[in-house]
Image 1: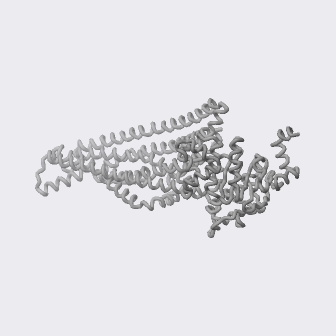
Image 2 (image 1 turned 90 degrees about the horizontal axis):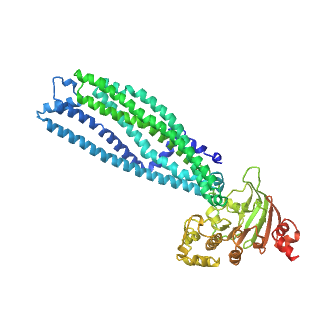
Image 3 (image 1 turned 180 degrees about the vertical axis):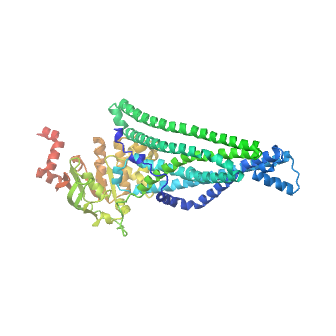
Length: 623
């Protein structure tokens, strides 16, 4: 079962740098270009400040710790310059004074580096948070506009990953990826310049280990890329499995499958653990390997530089400065491989994010959308053909009309296409042939907000959001005041159970209405529909999940709710639609019969057989 999880998108890494994607990401950076400029300037300053320490060490050792001898040419360039300036000005600087000045300079550079790095990090983190906010807003806004067909083919877990993990990967790119790489490159260039300035021969010795470090980094990059892909795939399977089985926990427990699903999850979890262990191995080899190669470089500097010190060609201060610079030079090189992984993950995440943002909005509104001041409520299906899968039509050439204020019931076997009628009327899906019209205007010409604002729909599986009872009836519509809330709840007999709670309409509703009975959730859905006062009402199996007592309670409310509204009632229970003005019978996607309840019974067709099946016990008892 777990192998069926489509994790191909999660396993795609792509290139470490993609100019096309970076241009699109730059659009999100443009509003914060001042932050970017400030961060880059701070990076330059911090890179320069990190060059001060080793030079200060060289000056202290050359001029104030190691006595000046007969070989001034052995001193570092900066030490010779400072010594010449002291002599030119005729200053007498004691060793203690000189060491104190250099120590203060070193300390000052460290304190200033701290301040610069603090503001650099603060600015970049702030910019990252702004960019994440903008990205998540755009992604969620796009998902709000996408047609339901998109959600049919994309698992919820994958879409949640786009808004969470993928956006986080881009945040890491902006705050720890690009910025760190720029800082590392500037620091490397600065160190290389200083090393060649101090002694070009010793600089070449320092760089002798670069081929080894490069080979080690390339090996790690390849292996880490493979392990990163595997870890990501395993994590995607864990997320998919958890989402599916937590949502279906009632089925798991009902059929006592706890042990089996636990073992399945343990297997998936163990695969994820083993993938991480393999990734840890490469890190465990790489970083000690870097330390070993770095130690080799330090040993070469000590061997070659120490010989030059003994020969009087190089000062001790210059040698110590070389050692400090070398350590600072090797560390960014080792970190570049990790930055490579950050870049690669960010490019893959950005590609998936932009693929979602580029998803075509099939349900486009025309430039001059139809937005009437009032809706009469006439509904017409004209030669409508539709299929969810190509070559498998759900509806075939369906035509009927519902007059304003008329109640039309739709019945038929499961899969006959009843709910599809509602989906097409609300324009959740696009008609493929024919047209659906409201008040004589094709729904494709309507403004979506105007069309759906004229229609209310009550489903068999009521969805309630986390919040309060009032929130779930009002759905953010502030025009629905407390008086209308109370009226709507009273009309559908929901007020009684709502007021049984001390909090009343402010009672907490947990995720998906947990804690409420099926009947109570249905009543809240009816109150919601009534509160919005639509001209067109769709009831899709709205009473099939409630008990007989609750059904009797809301039947009178339904009569009130249907009064004066154009209503499309989809039902399995024929008892709920016998008073409908007209009944349409669908069979295998085709409109086979229509008429009143008595007319359809008299035809002795499909409706008659459905009626016989549902009431055979009562009919047998009566006979």
